[in-house]
Image (cartoon, rainbow, N blue to C red; front, side, top):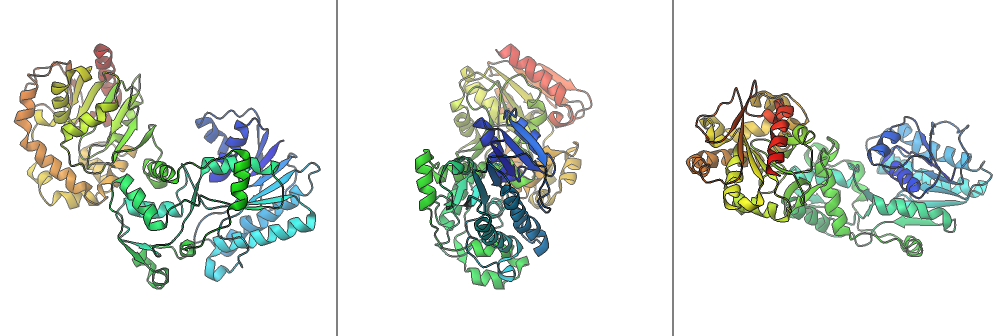
Length: 554
């Protein structure tokens, strides 16, 4: 084989395998359980040159295919590990990889992936914690043993590697920011938590074997802003409030963890230290590698974190991201359908319907709801901005509360819309109860579990409802849901009047258990057995209506 990658199912290892395969190399992937092959298939990576082999690094390695280049990307990365658990892979496993590599007759390079904070550090398990101390011990042991055996070694010391799938370390801090649990930042104004993107790091790793051996490369972006500026940048992108205060690390260490929420093992990373990146920059220059602008990389990673619910979910629609603080998923240029959600859910409510539609869709979260930040513009102006990039004449689909703004947009911009489908239009049904619009509704919504929310909405519990429940717990979202209900109740008559002015094809979809209270003057499809959320309970029937409406609009 051209290369063998240990730890090939890990965050770095699997991306490295994909990079090497993309370069046409024959790659052996050493795994304990093969979750790599489906991961590569999902990303369209050609696997003709891949050989997946089983290996247990905690034992001496035998029976593996020979390789020219050996990469050790295996690590037990978690905080709160026991010492023996951490050492089994991070120290013993690293030495087993090295000793096996020493037996290869045509070995060109062993690339050991370490960490930017551990090189040359004394492995003090009591002070550093098991993960960082074991990585420090491994760094010393691998260097020493490689010298003894004459193994051509290069060590890569990455900082926080960011990209889809990275949900530890700095990601936890961003998660606290997103969920309103970060009143202050640990550390001072000069804390330096550098990052490097996964794409750059894997390209860098692929170049190492052709460069001279014996180097230790610190691979990180020197332009990463100090932590307060980094968090401020991410906060502005997400549309949330950044903390204005910092707390000295020493004080955080002394406070109870239940109060701070900080894992003691992460605190040693909160340092103003800088790192010797000259050799890594020289190698990158020779290979023609350039880091992407760090601000763009951080914003893209923040999008990935929100899309994956910080590791709790799988994104159902790509591309995704924040656009002017609005969460947008799908095709923003050529959608066949634009899907607008109602209350108290988000755009994920359309996942099952969208999967059944014939063409691309655009699905945003409404301003101030779901994942989107509040807007100081009326919803109609926000919708006009959203549609500004759309080049098609899509079918505009709206549910419940969103039906009013969608109808107004269709009346004012008939040339931009091919058709209009109103699903359970709130202004044609009985108004929400006083209790749902009262001040006590918001705290009740915020405390609802996914199961309780599903029962309240009369829909099956599933990922769409779980997603909505997560959003309702974020500061201000539940309160804005209730405020939107009150505003919608006040505009019912005006919305009904617009139905006589619309000049594009209109179709109404309602459930038999959620009837209309007024004649819309347009065709109505009633779905037997459905309630207020037919897109969740009867997605196939809703998709058929939308497909038909889309075809007639075209």
